[in-house]
Length: 201
Image (tube, rainbow, N blue to C red; front, side):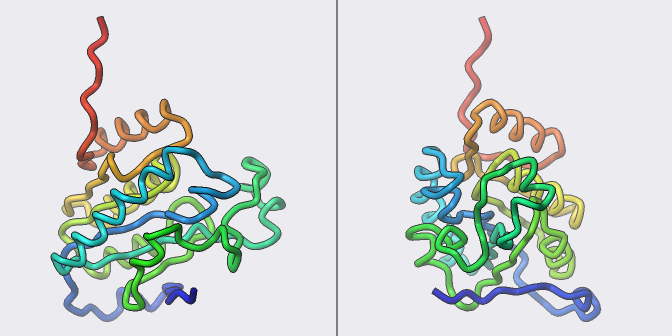
């Protein structure tokens, strides 16, 4: 399947146009994180909720952006590869593609951003250029790429309402998942659909 991959250049921001004010960002819902080299069960369960979220965005006229964790064949020699020595999301491989029904919902008009690291400066610049008022993030992994890009979104547009749907994100480490949600809330990123915490007796 061919994707429209946008590699944003330094020209962004020099000429402003009018864009929709709401955006849904689907972070790295790629095969390697769901049923590939870095898969974990909680990621599989996100397929339905994320698809529902995308369909709702389409119905409301909300723009949808997809990010792709993107590595080259020499991944294991990079800093990330040395810290996480599991080859994944190698550009052009099946593991790099969007997973399952989410892939079917991606449309040619959607912006797709390749990012070689956790956070995407290109995404932050795009958000700033388009001056969105509401930004919602879903996808994986909550304590790594979702967290990184939510923080960048808040930095790009400090007055925008930045939201992460807890029912549409997950981590292979439940403890780090909860800590990430706590941290995002402390940074005034709204976390929705988060189960109530069990009171400590």
